[in-house]
Each structure stands twice: as structure tokens, then as C-alpha cells.
Image (cartoon, rainbow, N blue to C red; front, side):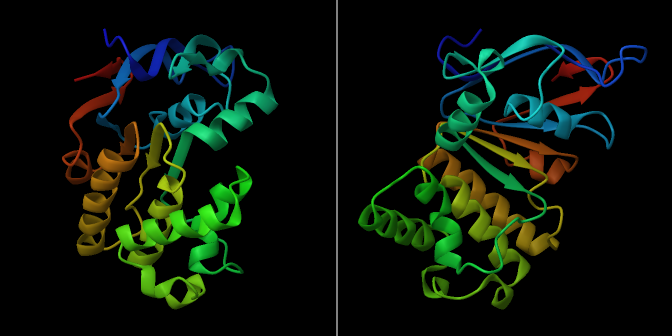
Length: 224
């Protein structure tokens, strides 16, 4: 068992109705600092539900989730929201950038929510835009960018506050193969240099192949 896990779950169970089989049951896992893990599974096996439970967006029916030793399943709603804001970066299949903000404003949003001073926000935002190759697009609206470029904005936004944990849910599902490969390479590189650990949810073996290790989620649970 990993001693200093960034993410740990024990006996995790989730069901939507008590008279039906659980979506998943008894899941246990530890993700070490510096590790990039992929969880694969077919559509409908509960991958996104699992990610939502890990992030504290949905409660489990049994078991516990810890991030950096703190049991998020024991926190109230406000404390979970603050933990997500400070410790987690999200990358989604739908990019979720705000169209009325510039590229730089989108990337800086997590820092603004955390109350970073303006000068530090500007410096860190510039640093991340340079890291993802979009410094020249800082003042542009997202509508002027390609899908691959917008996903790079989303990756920069997810990592700008140096989260302990990055959760990526099918992050290349809306991209063509060439842009998907670039986004996956960038995501891995930035997780390794900027974050504590990363977890990729995907049905793609190509995407999972960029991770350090891969687990399958199915009716039997999580397994190698």
C-alpha cells in the first residue's frame, strides 16, 4: 500500500437505487505523488461517476476518499468546495471555457477564486500560457481558437494553481487524433512538472498508454 498517497479510496461503493446492483462496489486504490494513473472502462461502467465521487461532487454510499490524508467524505459541502478549489484541477471532454472571458482570464480564474494578488495571478498565468504554447493568444476570446488550442487552455487552467491532484475525464474525446496526441503529451508533461498526481478516465487505449499504469473498471471492480 502506498504510504504517502495523494489520493486514496477504501471500500468505495456507489448506487443510485437501493433495489438495484451498485454502479461500483468495494473499490480500493492509492495513487502516489508523482504518479499518473489511467482508469479505463466501457461506456456505462461508472467511470465518470467514480471521478465525481473522488472529487466530492457526489457522495459514496459506503467507503472513504482521502486526498493528501484528508477524508473528503467526512467534510461538509463548504469544506469540500474549498478543498476542490485548492487541491484539484479538472480537465473535461467538453472544454468548459467561458466564452466571454479572454484566454488569459480563463486560465487565471482558479487563482482569482483563491484570492491570489493581481500581480501574482498575472505572472503565474503568463507562465502557464507559455508552458502550453499559447502566450501569443492571451488576449483573444476562445472562439478564435481551434479545438486543440482550447483544450490547451483548459489544461493550463487546470494546472495554474499547482493542484495536488489532476482529474481528467475523456480530455481528448472531442479532438482529432493529431490534436488528441498533442494534448495527451502536454497533459502528462504538465502533471509531472506542476501537480502532485494525475488520474485519467478514458475508454481509449491510446490515451491510457500515456499514463504510468492503467486499471480497468468493470463489474468485477478495479483491476490491472
